[in-house]
Image (cartoon, rainbow, N blue to C red; front, side, top):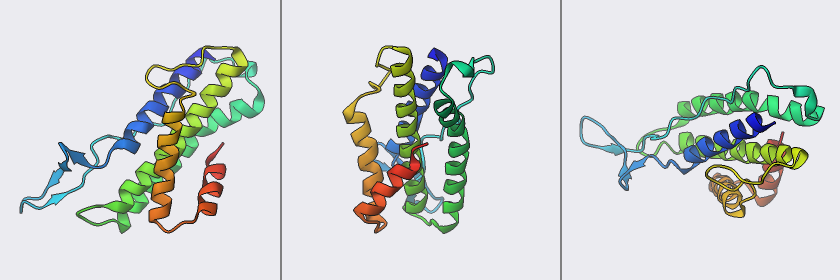
Length: 171
């Protein structure tokens, strides 16, 4: 369980880095065309889907929890495909669709990873902390939830759509 928690914490941190990436460098658009026009360009590469060690004793974890953990890489690949697909409808200088897909997708993945790590900690009575963020940190979760809400509101989705989206994103 300890190794899974560490992997989930790291994945949540890397996902939060993606959510925080607005395509800027030193406060300006990060990209520059040969004509001198600025455009927003991702500065943080999305993390690889988590890979869990093969020697984990999965039978020590409740079936439902183990299933949700093992589905996280599948969901991560789905998010990555959504990001790539959004690039077909995204244009300079802002590339809003790409950034929205990255931020919303990775906010949901990071929240899921944090919740899964918390469940493992609770089940095995591990300390409730992680390396960079407290796994129970309201600020961290508020940041991620606010980013999802901000994107969905900008896209014209209602508060009801937001609630359904967060519920459906939970594994």
